[in-house]
Length: 53
Image (cartoon, rainbow, N blue to C red; front, side, top):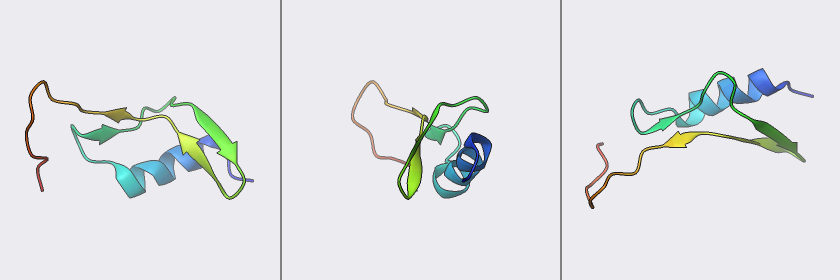
């Protein structure tokens, strides 16, 4: 079974976007069948705006 750190690393590889989606070094990990949920920070602007990219 993968460790919490392995899931955090994978979450960063798949989803990290500086200033938009970030995973802390000590983010909570909830292991489930076939994967895990990893706690992340998601930027939400005050007003409607398009995401960069």
